[in-house]
Length: 56
Image (cartoon, rainbow, N blue to C red; front, side, top):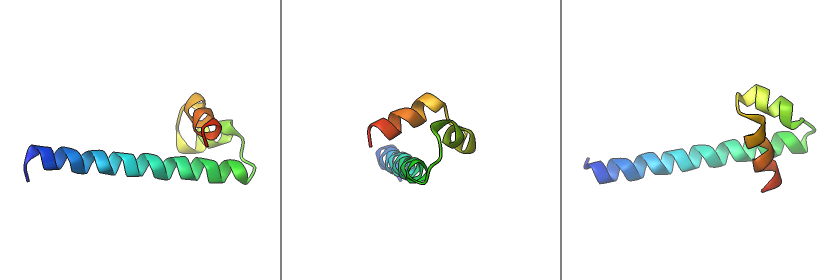
């Protein structure tokens, strides 16, 4: 596989993973989890979790 194809594949995987994490964060928030709890469970910065929730 050429480097361009590999780069595109890796970018698509990263975007898909990021989208899945965002969906998980929104689902947890709607079920009553606080941003701090989500941050702790997913091992993410709380500011990033809040940003995803606000942009939903």
